[in-house]
Image: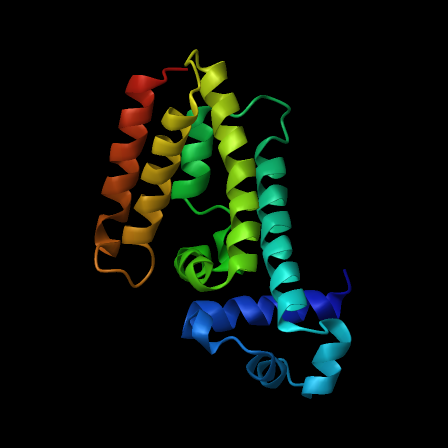
Length: 185
């Protein structure tokens, strides 16, 4: 992917994080990227193309962050994954504590986004299931989904600017205590 295309996608993330998904249009993205609509359409012919590449870009950035977490070659523990999510390791450039709630909302009105985000979650779910299996759990999908919901919900309620942001560290500690008790290393 070209640097310019990556910059445009990063601008799309900023628009979604700052203004909500309703603020993202091809015209708004062109304006925020300092280009004319025609120039933007050179990179992304349609809104659908842009959304597809945006979610793919987000998925790749998270995959890179997960790969960096696995850099030592050890399997990821349930605790490692929880800390990754709760500490928002990939969050800085992706503004994930503000981006993901908007992506969740977009899923309700944009079937393409729903399918693409579900693909990202399917990968995330498989990583959690493997960690659960490694921890001796029967790694049922229900258990993995429950854990994923708890972690994602924690970021939703305690993200930057959220009502319970001041409870972020307490929620993190509580989630990790639950995981340590249930899945000791």
